[in-house]
Image 1: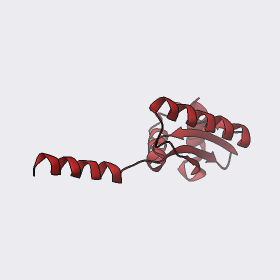
Image 2: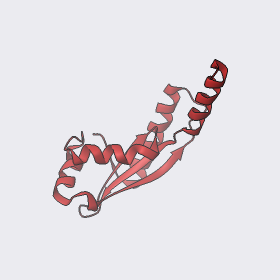
Image 3: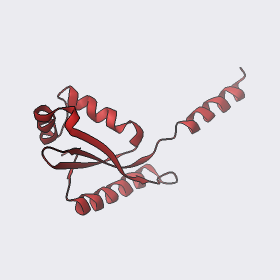
Amino acid sequence: MDKQRRRDTVQAWKEGRKSRAGIFRVACAPEGKVWLGVSRNLDSQQNSIWFSLRHGGSPNREMQAAWKAHGEDAFAFDEVEAVDVEELSAYLVNQRLQERLKHWCAELGAGRVVA
């Protein structure tokens, strides 16, 4: 494969893997607790959070305690809002996500995933 074809193939692969950024919600039904967070990749965020909770490594002690008390079946993960950040710099992406997180925390009366 020549260099140009390789570059084109890699670029096509990267285009197909574009991730969606936004705000997500983790809820524990028995406790009535809701936590919100931001993600640059909503499609894989739940897996990351569940992994840390299963292994006792969540930085959110309240969420980890609820997981230990009630188990995985008591938890739900939802996308709250996808945020279009395609044309923004890394700084502006962070700023936009934090603005939306602040809005949704106030709107839903929720805590944050990472405290």
